[in-house]
Image (cartoon, rainbow, N blue to C red; front, side, top):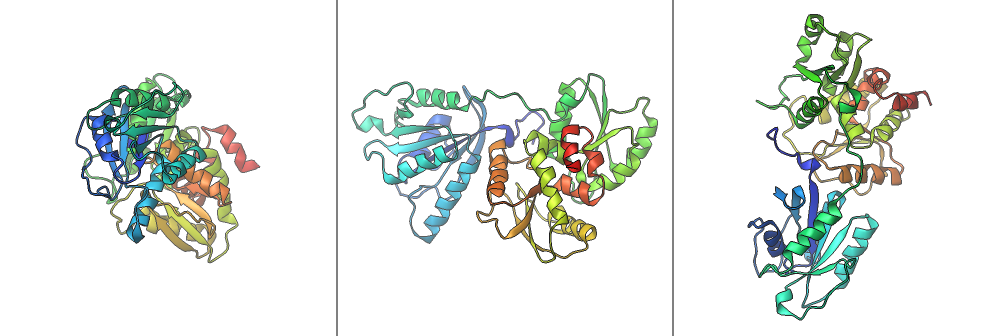
Length: 402
């Protein structure tokens, strides 16, 4: 990802839903002005959710999601419908596409119920209006007439989506609110076999940008160079931010009078789940041998021989607790619906997931009474440095004394 691109997790996610042949893909193409989705008169042409990042006026950076028909049939169809419902967990604005000639169906009404249950703002696009008589709707009515064929109503649909996408909430910061202009921040980025070739990972890029916007100074070093770098600096840094995997070594090399935390902890705060993740890690001390632990990642990647999720975290947990547990893993958009078999969920930092999906996963775990923490907090706990890594957040740190 280029430094000038908006990360997918920070884009407004707009999901298009509806029955087969309602014209979802045609409407997606009409709204975006591009041939993003394959269009065919054959039912069920869209077999998996299709994602596309783009700039969409008047909204700005968005993620467009075209989904399979919610009335798909057979075993394969049921799997497609399941994937469509999973898209709801990350959808900021839903567009229900209805064939205006056929009218609303029970399946459409069920989707509206799901939108409302999940508190997703939505608009009902009555497509193919060029083929039937239309009537006017009130300003607050979620319905709108559109025609993917001749473009009628598409501009008004985009305006309606933009209105629903507006969030009147304070802008969240990663680290900038902890800094003053001209503060020094040292970022520790290990370069090993697991590091991507030729680039920094997304949380590192975003943190650097956030520090720049605070008019502070960031210095990026490898974990092997931190100790010497701190000696060479003519000014004490305000903070050291490290990749969680290097926590132990970085803690040893960072003087006690310098704040220390991790990218993972900063992003837990940024996503709004730092408090619950700190509370969740305490479950590690109550687990019994043989309990199941779910390790979940928001992205998919090629697992290496010393992979953090499948190798390192289970090893650190074993060293910390002295117990053997059963492990299961999930990645990408897959997140189990039934969590009750697990004693603990350990989630990645969620840099590739938008705020809505991270909150959904946290809420879903909470509703089933399953504690959930994240990689950085669990690593800090197992290395005995969680209290220190929370020094920048005294209110959260006090939870450890409760």
